[in-house]
Amino acid sequence: MDDGFALAVVDMQKKQAMAELRECNELTVCYDLYLSEQQIYELTERRFSALKDTGRVEFGQGILKKLLTAFCSSPYITQQNYPDTILELQDSFYYFKNESMEMISDDELIGFMKNRFDGVCQGSLEYLSNTTLEELCRNTRYGYDVDEIDRYGRPF
Amino acid sequence: MTNDLSILIPDALVAETPLSDEEITLLKIKLWQLLGQRTERHTMSDSSSVPIETAEQLFNSICFTLQICLKAKICSLSELLSNDNLQQILRAGQAEIEKKIAYGKTLLLEVMHTAPAIKNISYVDTVKGITAFFKRYDHRYFAHEIPADIDYQLCHPVTDQLLGIEYINDYLQRLLVENRFIGCFDSKKVKLLLNCYCRDYRGLLINLYDPVATNAIGLALVGRDVFALDISADTRCVITEIFADLSKSDAINRLAAAAQEVCELTNTANVSAQNYLKQTAFDLYPRIMAALPTGIGGIFLTLPVEV
Image 1 (cartoon, rainbow over the protein chains, first blue to last red):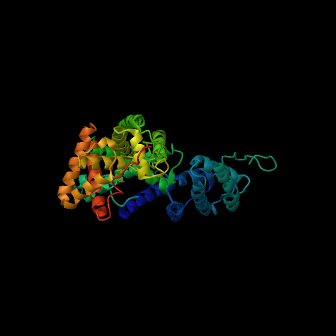
Image 2 (cartoon, rainbow over the protein chains, first blue to last red):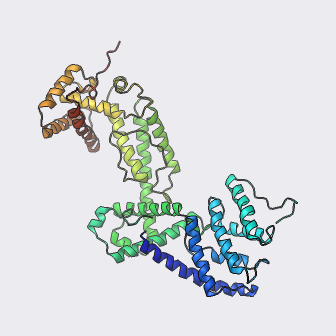
């Protein structure tokens, strides 16, 4: 499709995404988490740059709403780190979506990320991206089972 | 993705019904929506995003299927613009493709039944590859793809503009024409001729039809027995003399007449098979003219004397 049309489509998607994020505030406010208009704008812009960087095309709702809904209950997210954490999580999501070679669904990946983030990673985004997600994608690619217990036999 | 809609709408149709900028934008919006729906179905709602390459392939498949609808006159360009439900038109296109797949399978069976008794590796592998194509072909999501290994070189190749099942069906039709023609001749003589044409005719990527058709046309040119497939040095001299004196248009007419005679002798009533042989005859003209100064022994071959 030509650039003019593509830009119009992206613009339309951005407006839709921003409206969805405003709706999410209603849900997250009970966890004392709130996104300002500027933060909503930044998150939306970052979504499209992340898609571009990872060479992906997104249709429909996108992933931000699902990420916010899943992570708002995390004990490691506070209003202070909320926007930055979601930005990082969004980038990681698209990156690892590619790395898993489309073999993990959106919900599974978000579920795994949340489980590890609250569990073994104890809120560390670096740990999440550099160890557990790498391991998940490697195991998925090779068809191995993903360990749901740590080295001491405890579930994550 | 492509910069225009030429992938969807054939140039001829655009010339027939030129689209305004608004109509093109409208069509693009509808295609974008359809692509979203198809992507969702492809990922079974598991993923909201797909790699650009996958989206491109899905888009090309949609365009290919809609183009089939336009070609088969299932819908017109104006209907494509006015219809709010492109899914419905897409389904009609998929049904049309299914008919083509069924036709392709019958063509493949015929090709297998008429295959020449010559074990050419690329021929055998290609038939196997096309058999696998019918198992691998995903006409719902990747209708434009040709998941088959096609090594065998046809005398007149299929145009690159054909995709998916259309390419395969055209290839099989051409292969069937070649098979039936070769089947009119004694297989022992065909093997001897191919051996003269290329020592390793079983292993190399050569066309089996071309040398047989060439010699048959050569023999028809001089009024000899085309089924002998043997062009002696004397016959080559006669052919050389004929072409040395003829103008281009006369030579072409002579070749066309020879091809027609071969068709009659081999009971080739099918018009496309006749045209196929005529095209082979026309292609001989530049080769003969180029070889005239040095001799046409490399074009019209002599069979070895049997011991």
